[in-house]
Image (cartoon, rainbow, N blue to C red):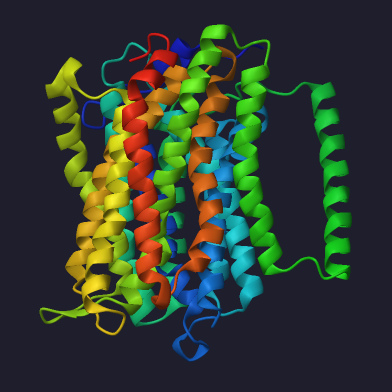
Length: 497
């Protein structure tokens, strides 16, 4: 029996029930809200849990290694989306992938809710990486399946959904961060698990009546022969990995440092392989090759941007904890609270930017120049941190307003680059590789955090000026070069505006 058509899937979804949108948007909004609550809640306290002394409830890991682990964790989360997308397309379908992903994420948080050593930490991370890979890309796919391509509500629906992501990301550090840093880390991780559980309950209780066929169809299921081939390859792959692990353990090659290095290299190599395969494919025509050429400098700019933006949970988290006045105007500030600033500013500024681009119309900057503006602001956000460090030295604590300003500036950059990057990816993608090119866009974040795994180890109190100044300066120089190259890159886009 053939799969239903796109229109049949749309017709199966109740089209009214959530602010004039399909009823299923309520299900997906709250599922993603609670998933982001659990993810950002854990992320807000994870680095502190790793390097705080055992007497303070932490693991007592080396601070430098903690930032590297945090970056590798973030990189693997984005890499896992490729596996999650493939499993949804060929095996489970998006809806079951979201459900299984949510269970794995919840189990990951439960593991950390109980006291344990580094082995429990890595078990938890593995579960959350796999779970997020299954859930994150596929919940967005289901949102798209509820609307026909001509439905004028489509963009608005994604905006409402995006608001759920940021509301969860805003609230989580305030609640989980406070409980984790002020009372008990394991209690904080337990709250993150409860958040994911609530999301799963909402999804299970409402999906049948609200989502119809959306997410329930396996788009490209494997036949028996393919299943046999894939099963055989998986068994061979598992044996090879087991042998390599056994050899690495026997000869002492498998260390935390070597694992960080391997993932960092993979984070850079995988996107390069994607580009080479798409560019050389006979399914890619000359116009599409030209557009891929234009996409390369945009991808590099995105890696530069995400490298700085993702340091909010590593280097800037350390800065918030160790270099910032946390007793301010009679208020005791948890260092985890700063993690709420990014989603808060996005909620406030996203409508402003949407209105601003509409107002400019044809006068708005081109795609390459929007990217250039994005990484200029990213570099500026690091140079802002440089100022209090320069004037106060490494002995005095700095006002928290400097961190607030830094977060505000980088959100301006994010709103110039991130939504534009998603749109540009859909426009510049070769027809035969449209889904894989979207995976490539998310790999820009994976590559950035893989690079950060090595880069952040260079940060310390003694290197603050050099660290913030060099990275901020490189980003600004790259932004200026990209801005000047804008017309040339635009020419390679072959009609895409």
